[in-house]
Length: 162
Image (cartoon, rainbow, N blue to C red; front, top):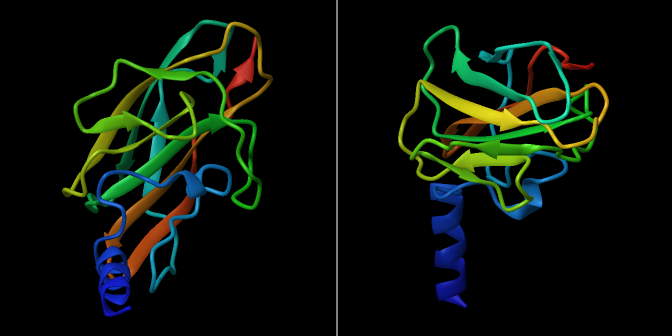
């Protein structure tokens, strides 16, 4: 029993250093405890275009305009427009940098590989072969793991289907 408690406390202290767990897929909420989250979201998404057609590639970047470092992230592309909406990812992230991996949710999400400090993350996303309607790129960003400080709902500009 003491071993299980120790393992539990270690997980709480280190968060998910190898990427977001599958439980975070739809609601995009990290499972870190305890959590201290308040204030405006300092993290932004910049994207290359605001419309797409099937098969297009969109590049983007997750960053902080205030140069705040972050340790973890989960980025998905889907139809959600509000942080309270569950996400159903579409399309596929491609040409991943060495610090990024496809998320366990599927090809439409990416997460961190390690919990090293980051100032930004660049990515490329390929639209599905058939239109999925208007979309947004959405990010959850973890600034630190213990106590956990994370921000939900960094949304890109809406990406209109052509």
